[in-house]
Image (tube, rainbow, N blue to C red; front, side):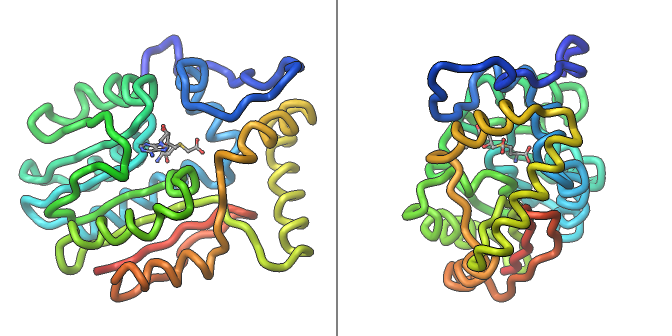
Length: 247
Ligand code: GEK
């Protein structure tokens, strides 16, 4: 991250828009991403930090640690900080060039070039092999629902026995009462972090067709269907959850 961007405040949806287009991870979003995600996703920093701890517990010498939808590299940095082994490879994949550029700027000089591979690709096309841990945080929700099981099966197939898949997601709820409550609390979180009602409403409209959440039980059931020996939930803050599946 350059010094310019470190403190860049997210005002992407602050101005009234005549029409709100679907959300994209473009240059404008990449420039303010750390601020946007910290103020929008309750527990984001904790999830990134704990993902690194979980990845480290599952890393074996010579294995690959993947961050699929790596954005600016927070989870990769966290994993690297806890894995003191020069034979481990850190592989980040993202299909948005501006996000990957930020990621490279953040990781260069921290992770040795020989241990780091950043790939511009759709996670559905990424080659996954010899994986000790795969981090898929806040990214499966952007994949077409019909492609999600296939992606998880490919991750499972590329994972070493004893390896871990870490998934964090926005979730939905079967109960309308709980759905309303959690959405209200999430909006309260955004208000507390300085977003206006207009910003919250325009961002919601931008994400409506782009971010398609599943329920937590649907995540757990699909992880089992994908072949994982065990799957559990280890985090929730309002309508955001994280899961751990082991092969
Ligand atoms: C974090 N894990 O900071 N293929 C590759 N990348 C994708 C795809 C896809 N099909 N779809 C979306 N992305 C990160 C996640 S954001 C989450 C952060 C959010 C990428 C997209 O370009 C973006 O960088 C990331 O997934 C999702 O924990 O903003 O809500």
